[in-house]
Length: 482
Ligand code: ARG
Image (cartoon, rainbow, N blue to C red):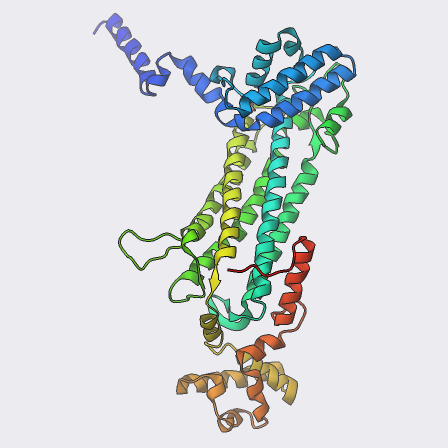
């Protein structure tokens, strides 16, 4: 084989190297560059934030005299029309123009000429994208906050309805002590309240405006960063231009908050799956939140709950993904940071859907109160109440009372009966001081009614907590019907 023919084979292979990417890459490596470089496919969702940022920037440029008032008016009109164009689905998005920032700016110049070309004075895409992304995350937080509050309201309403409905409380998924269904639901209200708090904290720290940091060093133009910060409803401008364009902490905090919230929703979803399963049968979901099986006609599968449980993976995965992108990046901007958006968008979609599905299921579920009550009394769930009675009435030390009760449980187990079925003589054989009065604490209702300590499961506590939250959340404390 001659050198020449070898060369010509290599040339063929090089051509084919792009052919393996499929028809879209027939034009050669520069198309691969465009494909890896372009973010318009996903960052177009930030168009509203990009236009808002540009409007504020242009207003400021005119205010300090960097551009004329006429130019600003023309820019404002042009950007407003572009907004309408995008909203109507008529905007000619171009991959060659890379991202949403260049797409909008190029379109503006096409439409209004010279004035459009002045917009990018004293800014860079680095501070532009940092601003747009903060605005986007801030909007997402505000939307999610409403959704979390709605789910908390739904839970509190159902809790109020079931403040006195006994169910088995578990540890190790073994029957432990009776609790009320309302109490169990209110536990999730507390978790979600902390999730809301984490989102609010994220928002507080996020709310500084990076616009005007330019590429990395600031700008020589006499800009007014306080003005743009105010126009965009930020609390203040960021303090360090290098940090401003390279910081993605706000996105990471947001993803951390979502990951923790997803973990809570996943636990709730897992419980819904368990409660729906036929051996438990604590609740029933309607056709609206279940699917059937193509082969087993009796099936009613809690797919929505299972998918909420599974979507946790997307949210936690997004956090790990962005942490990995950011770790080891030198200051200031690097293109790696363009990979910040998809995890945030994906996690947000998953969170929006998961919250909506949980809210739907909580409103939809019907409690099988008879089954819950029956199981609440099984598994010697009131054994602790015997021990507590021995301590309270006979002044037996708790550790001793625990042993005595253990022997009573063993005796009941041996006979195959419940604790309340032991005779007084059988009880007195273990502790002669026991009187008839002990039977008064053995029922499920007596057990839950006695748990009046702050935060305990007594029905009065539970409804007070539900009412308190409904008031805090600004909801009428009324029970939603099925
Ligand atoms: N699309 C880019 C991003 O999302 C915008 C910033 C580009 N900046 C740059 N120096 N190339 O990060």
